[in-house]
Image (cartoon, rainbow, N blue to C red; front, side, top):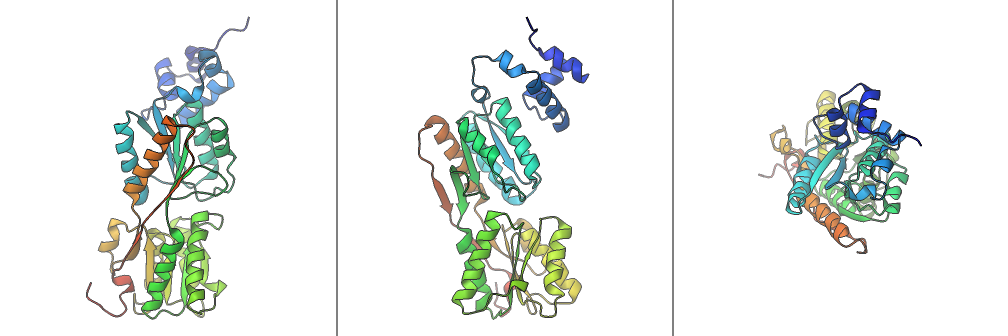
Length: 341
C-alpha cells in the first residue's frame, strides 16, 4: 500500500522545516511567495490535499477571502482593499491579498493557488494582459463565489462592481470640448482590456455627437509601465499635428503626458489640456494640478465584499452588477479660461 504524503515529506524534499511548510500552505505572508509556490506545487504533485482531506471539499477549508488586484500600490486598489477588509472583519473573515503585476500568467497562477488552499471566495480586478478567462470559469465550476470590481469582462457571468466608464469618459471629452479643445486624443491601456475600450467608446461617442471626425492618429495605447506611458504620450505630442487635449486611462498615464508636454515645450493647459482617471492625492500637488475622474474606490471595495458574502451565504442568489457614480474633479490642467478654482 502506497505511503501517504506527510507535511514532513514535503519539508524534507524542499529542505525546509515542517513549520515553514505548514505556514506556506496557509499562505502566511511571513513566508516568501516563491517558497509558498514551491510548497503548494509539490503538495499538489504529491496529492497531499486529497490524502489529508479525502472527504472535505477543498474550497470550504479556509476562513478567508482571496483578493487579486493588478498592483497594491495603485491608489484605487489600496482604497478598495480597505473597504473589502472592513466588510470581511464584520463577517469574521481574513483576507489573502495578492497582486498580479498586470500579468495574465501570474493572475492565472494566483487564482489556482487560492483555489487550492481553499479560499471561501475570490474578489478580482483583472490584469492588463488578461484576455483568456478559463481560470475564472474553473472557479464557477467548483461553485467558488467570484466578484469582479473596477476591471471586469463580459465572458464570465458573475457579480461585478464598476463605475459607468462610458459615461465618465464621455463627460470628460465633453469638458475638453467645452473649454475649446478641437483635437482631443485618448491614451488607453492595453488594447484587449475591456475597461479601456469602454472608455474609448465614451470618448468616441462624445466626438461623434459633437460632429467631430474620429482621427485614429489621436488614439494611443500603453501597458502601464512608465516607459510605455511616456512613449504613448510622445507619439501624440511629437506628431506633425499634436492634440490640444488628452484623456488618459489613469492619473499615472496623465502624469506621463504632462512630463512629455513639458519636455516638448508645451504649456498646460494653454497648449494642451489633460484629464486623468482615479483622482489620486498627488493630483492636487502637481503643477498644474490635474483634472481627474474621481472613482469611489473605498465604496467599490465594500460593495464587492458585500456581494461575495451574499453569495457565500446564499449560493443560489442571482448575479448582479452594481454601477457606482463617478465625478469629474476639475483642476488647473484643464483651466484654459483661468476660472478661479
